[in-house]
Image 1 (tube, rainbow, N blue to C red):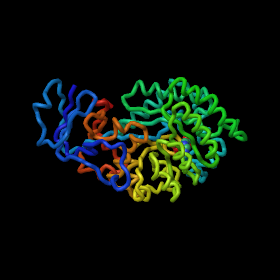
Image 2 (cartoon, rainbow, N blue to C red):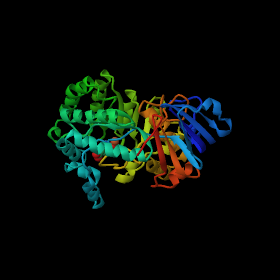
Image 3 (cartoon, helix red, strand yellow):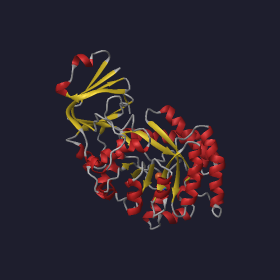
Image 4 (cartoon, rainbow, N blue to C red):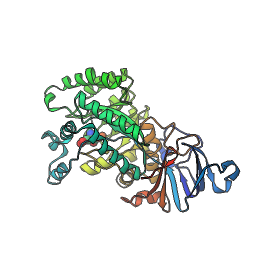
Length: 417
Ligand code: NIG
Ligand code: FE
């Protein structure tokens, strides 16, 4: 089937020569076509350009569906490269606890936080987890997300980690959203290993990773490299084991301090290092010489009242930056990429153009799919959205909290959501 989008006010993030990512000054450049058309043939983008160049004969009229996009923008669907959306229940009681003065760490030390979610997940059947996560996916689709990375990490024992990863595979089979799966067995140290972290690391290495790999349940491996969670040495051991099974690293690094996570991530050629609320010269220099995508999660900073990653400085120094939501029950219970974009503008001084690059092509890179998603380019998969009637890209983030996504098209098909 062919789908023709016509009279598009602005077709955003077009590429003639697709790039795998965008860095530094180039992040402020966003190619667009005004008064444009876009032709989709089955699941792929087959042509686009200014309306005046549209060749009706070439477009043809065999089973053609036409959509008038007057006054609307068309842009690539968001690529959310860091989430934890498979989780059980919710943790609003901790949110209230923080309002009353407790810190995230204090809550965690009392058995709340990630361990609280692990307990809930243990008690929740896979079918219920699947239902809850499916509802979250539907929610983020309505907000314009077309690709999402999902981590395990609320199991913290072999059986429950496998349960989570199987739910992620199940979601992959049932949703049109592109899903990448990450094994995060080292998300927190379970209570029974409190005084034996290396014992838990052994379990991750000797039992979990081989089983995850045997069932081909994950694309990537992640570690929460942070004081009180896993040290750089623990992280290194886990990464080496994962890499042996073909799992490329993506690291939680420098969320609460200078954890050494960037160093270990770059050393093992991580696809991304994420959070980065704490960054200095050394981290920036290491990333400049690497293929690792620095990923910012301003939703977590907002929700936990933490410092924001110095993304302005990172881009000014020449780095690429990806933007993701970190959608999870404890530090960022929102998967709204447009809202994360508003935070990046308001709290991290990113320009709307930089935010769009960070949330599309660079997000796609951080989940290993930028060859087929993340921009409007011929031959790429048609994952895009049509906005409501808005004046331009800047309005998307200016109008914070509004949902301006009108129609979502994934794999060339209009989504009935
Ligand atoms: O990315 N930092 C570690 N993991 C999550 C928080 C998970 C939770 O609190 O449930 C994060 O912020
Ligand atoms: Fe996270």
